[in-house]
Length: 243
Image 1 (cartoon, rainbow, N blue to C red):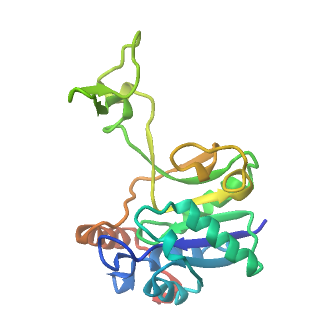
Image 2 (cartoon, rainbow, N blue to C red; image 1 turned 45 degrees about the vertical axis):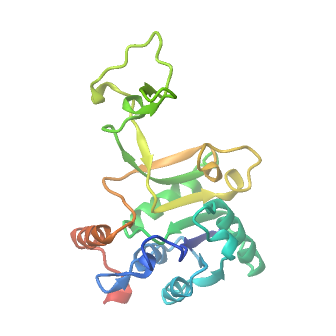
């Protein structure tokens, strides 16, 4: 079973050059790139971007460049379209993976062990379409969230008629939020499946195995860069290139 990694990032961001901003002396994208590079299960490594700085920084980590068309690098562009484009380029290069680890260049909160677990989940269960990290989030549970009615008042998202929903979060069903650091896809059951996947990330398919982690965030501002540094130091994450 062939496993490949695809690092994705675009240059058109509200925080200029955030994917290559230095974190502990390395570009931010270095950390997801090297987490995947450290996995023996992954044999091929590619980067998709419209930005030369991102492409060069990833190439320095051993990733082959895929120049993303400008039309797929807009703020309104869909991630799945960039993935499909990259898969086409990879095929032309002779790489046709069964499993694809899609890494997001704007998050340094990635562990090699998480990636390995996600790959093993798919290798050992043909039923699965994807596996990815999630956070258990009970404070902002959907049952406790509100939408805005046309009259300007708050309303529930669900029809709770005949039900008595507890105000205590511990009484509610477990609520998981997808992390935006990486997604591992069994392509036959996700991208290439004729069955529509779960909204809004339909490309992940319908049978997604979670990996529950304690913390995950991507970078939007300077404070997030500092938090990433603190997390990396706390977790003691280093790679062979650092030694």
